[in-house]
Amino acid sequence: MRIVFGHALNLILANPREPGDVADTQQGDAIERKLLTEYRLNLEYLWHDDKLRQQRMRNYLTINTLLVVALGTYLSLNPPIHYLGLSMILLGVFCVPLCLIWWLAQARNGEVIRFRRSFLQDLEQQIKDFRTFDLTMKAFYDGVPVAFEHLTDKAGNPVTFEARSPAKKSSTETESVLPRIIAAFWTSIIYLGVLITSYSVVMQGSEAEISVALAIPTIALVVLVIFLRSYHPQLLPWKWVLK
Image 1 (cartoon, helix red, strand yellow):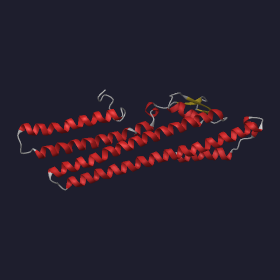
Image 2: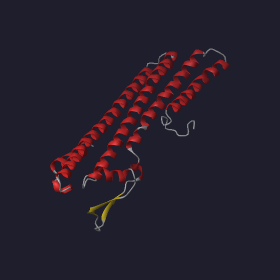
Image 3: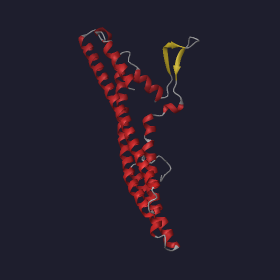
Image 4: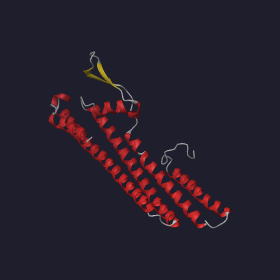
């Protein structure tokens, strides 16, 4: 991504436009220079935003991986059952909000990137012979076949590019599912922790007490799902949950 943006910047700097390319007046040339400067600035911002998104994704994945390893290491020590359940609950309660913050930050960053691309596309409509983002948006987001006039196949026909179906979905939207999946994993850890803790408390009790103890985690999970759906309808990846 950085190489592509850097190459675009080099093209802009290495090929200064003549005053007569856009207009025959000094005012027209000044407007073009301003547009090129703005185009270059937004390319740099877009590269920075994309780099930030990748770094954030890597950091959160690393944190969650380390926490899973820590949980696995603790399980290998065969701790008492009541300590095990409590540890799972505490770890899950910490990790679910962490995934929520991750998802919100990625959603914000994705919208910023979408704005940058739209703005660059708008600038290309005003700058002569600039089509990079306009053609990219048409091919990958609008699903419109893009013909390359100066590129031909073996038969001499112009090459037409059409994105395949899986590639038409935004990578930002696809990646936004990851924190929700990991949040669901930690939610299941909380559920298991509550289940283990409840069972250990009434392990010596009657069947009725045990049934009540096993029902408590299920009720708590349903309440958690209702809360998350009310907080943000798109937080959970399953569209059929509590419609």
